[in-house]
Length: 328
Length: 185
Figure 1 (cartoon, helix red, strand yellow):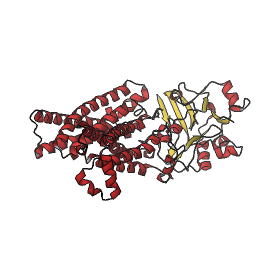
Figure 2: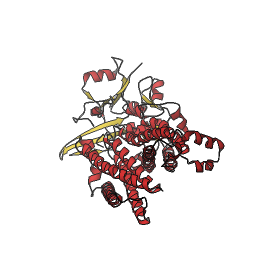
Figure 3: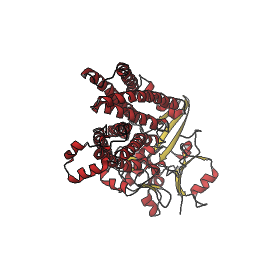
Figure 4: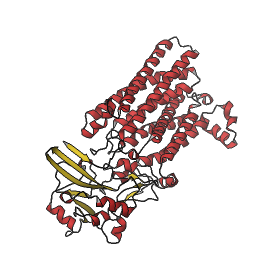
């Protein structure tokens, strides 16, 4: 028998010790969706033939929406800072070992590249909407560089998607997060949610269909990586094994995490099932027109993916803070 | 330069918590937060019980994960080798709090991260940390390990010592001697 008497040290006994809360969850979720969207719309824009240049951009609104999503996400991490007025200090140095420093520099870099992408894909007939003459001129110049900018945004999207996971996995003190599969899991879920978001916002039927197909692979990959993530922790040493306990106990105080895991394994396979149904229905006899109910079904499946991604991130952020490397 | 360490003589701790109070008073530690604590661990089956009292605080690690995690260099190594926080540079991102395997840090209500500083303001005046000065059982011993005749150097030569979570690889500068229980927490 071992009994330890101490001023409580975890978020369950003293909620003020919960260091990262819903604001970080929203940041990680929105950052992931934005990263996935950048990668996915770059794939769509790079798939089509190299010329004529003017007709290149297939995925036009996605970069703008990804920009807004990331900007809102960044706002949430700023309001999470204890002293946002000191943020300037983050830009007076770069600390290569600090993932926060990578984020401090990385997120504005992604936003900048994303802004160029928005201008590069504006269709000729819509350029007047930019209003400011210098933006119109810049847009004209960037259009011919669209492919290069799309490649840059693809790479930065991968960086942002994986960064959200590496940020958590860099904390050796937190066994649930300190796992090399977490960045992969976050990347795959970011790509999947990005594909889902594009399915929702796309007007072109071929884009909706393309990303429904891509998302099938991504959901399968995500489910496999989730299993690997838990298996890696289960086969590890005591603190790591303890870290996944909340996910596998319906009777404990933390049953909410078991519920989250169940929800993920209901939502994602359901989305997969619906998408596979769509694939079977449309493949071969797809003529580029969907009915309203078919679009509704596609959007519903995409919504399930987004909900699954959000629950996954929220559960990992909160559950991680329940177990530290020390036994109390 | 000195290399400050703290030695905790576990046998001598009487659990009076005077160190906790002295620290709070000396450093204006806000309500509900602590820079140090005393852990009371009981092992065995009644009536065969054994107890260990153990002070815990920032370990001023030589391989400090909090310094690596800090994006602004607010968490830094001072010239005397201790780990300190520059409150002006701290943006309150809380990465250091999560990075510390010892739960030694907390988020100060004013927004910055805070933790034990080995009372660096007292060290500059040639005094010992408040917890060491006030320790009734003389369980907390502080000094320069580079000074061969210092009490800490003598104790560490004389006794086997251990550090918390040695496997974490952080190389703490708070050493425990005469521990009741094998296996570090």
